[in-house]
Amino acid sequence: MNKVNESILWEFILLGFSDRPWLELPLFVVFLVSYILTILGNLAIILVSRLDSKLHTPMYFFLTNLSLLDLCYTTSTVPQMLINICSTRKVISYGGCVAQLFIFLALGSTECLLLAVMSFDRFVAICRPLHYSIIMHQRLYLQLAAASWISGFSNSVLQSTLTLQMPLCGHKEVDHFFCEVPALLKLSCVDTTVNEAELFFISVLFLLIPLTLILISYAFIAQAVLQIQSAEGRRKAFGTCGSHLIVVSLFYGTAIYMYMQPPSPASKDRGKMVSLFYGILTPMLNPLIYTLRNKDVKGAFKGLVARVFLIKK
Image 1 (cartoon, rainbow, N blue to C red):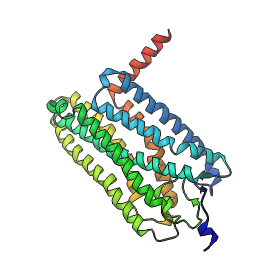
Image 2 (image 1 turned 60 degrees about the vertical axis):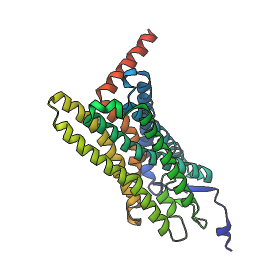
Image 3 (image 1 turned 180 degrees about the vertical axis):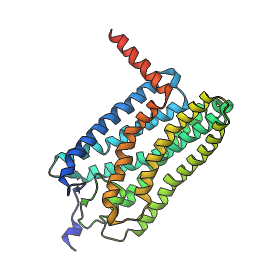
């Protein structure tokens, strides 16, 4: 048997945009600034949601989960991307690639479900306001969050196992910034039709179905909001739901493009840029969208800052 086929891969080369070296400095600055803003913004939301008793509601419990997801999501990929941009050897160990693949898949799948759960929470709050506390009781929202996390990690175990079992025949140049299923499938030296079909089916379960449920929820929400007599009430309802819809559009739109389109060599660079949207840009924008468009979070954040300054004085 060929020695290449028998060899064990100890590392992968992450090509990224190495064929365009002039892009590396701008990308490094963008990745670094985005990562810092992601860490600070999501940590702020977690702290504010936990420290302000007014925000101890299901909506902000789910928002805290989303911020925690985004913190871990970006940390699984961005530090390695920054190291590789600065290095002449743009490599990641086999173990590091496996860990990156598993964590990125698990947290991404969990976020798909969590965004759908958040839309259900908004549906109940706006369409069934008098029954909200009865329907969204503590046990239910804890179960919904737990189900999202468990389902996300279960999906990651399945997809990671199927992807890593594919023979690579010594191929180790990953044409991407990080280890992701579509990029790793392209390394395989055998037919990947079954894996691509499985990936498409899983994508329907974790992308299209949650997105459909979100759109149905917001159709009912829009109908209910238009019936609100108070202009202030309508503005508040649209403001809260509008922030969620922006997040949904950014996340699902780019993820569907990446995971549900047929593989095409012509669109490989476009795919890299699209993956940066749901892998880096969306986690950075989430806290900005939720704070800038949400009076409760802005008020709680100002109160927290004021308390910090009072303690220092």
